[in-house]
Image 1 (cartoon, rainbow, N blue to C red):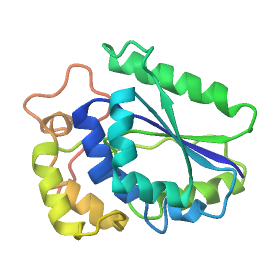
Image 2 (image 1 turned 180 degrees about the vertical axis):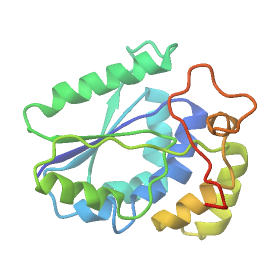
Image 3 (image 1 turned 135 degrees about the vertical axis):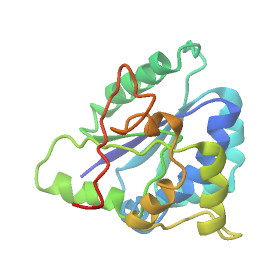
Length: 205
């Protein structure tokens, strides 16, 4: 099987988060390391020229390139004022580029953290013929989550970070974003247009 991992990232804030917090979680044994012997698979980063310079100098990027073939695709011609339209354009280009290789596409985000084993599970799902996997995330408050997360799991040499799924969820639940809190059934400021609904379990049940 041939996998293309697609990352669209630009701007100082997201590039820093991607390189120093997010990417290390992707380099674990049950994530990208599970693809190190799959020669046709690759990791594509869609970014600007300025951010590409920062990415290429990062020790974490060098660790990534030792595991899987990497490609930096410049998007200097893309209008970045609307980040969602820009991300869609990056994904469109990735889809077109993957057609010759008949690749399986994995769309990643620069602010999504992955527990160990997530990518390896994609291999297992693809092997039984499934064509699409949708994921749900827990939105956390970056200002409090990142310091706590790095203190708990990162060592001095943090090019790779391995976190068990339940442990990651446990930490995330301590740093829920106000948007996430607004989607609980007992929220006093429930969203007018919610994209999900969370029911708190009655402890007496």
